[in-house]
Image 1: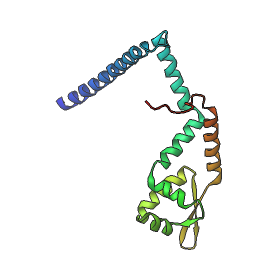
Image 2: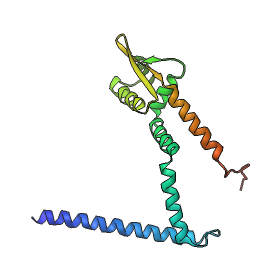
Image 3: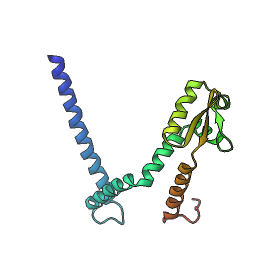
Image 4: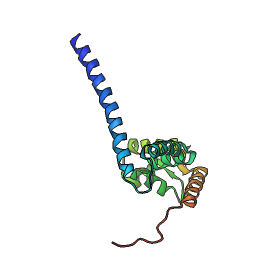
Length: 160
């Protein structure tokens, strides 16, 4: 009975500390924003930045790019994509290229398939893989759209 009380008590402390941390974070950020030259009302501006954050995170392109970059942020998966650029490859070729076991390669192949970056099909005894052109076309479109929307550029870097 004492253990249950301690566990409940412990989780209540964690919840209280989390709420305090969020309040402290907000207070600290508002104080920092108040020191910026271009900001008149730091608390109001903080609220607008929170709304902007929510909006940016929910954009279709952002969600798509985030998912693709998370998948491609792995060296082995990026190597698989690179190996498939010129031709379809079977799983045994990918094992040889990456110098990894079949189970290790299979996990990465499944992740790439789930992201709709590659497609596998059975050919003889082995599964062969190919890139999915429509996904890469969509990636290209989102990246081009994002790059075209950039308005905040340095024309050249100035050395200090």
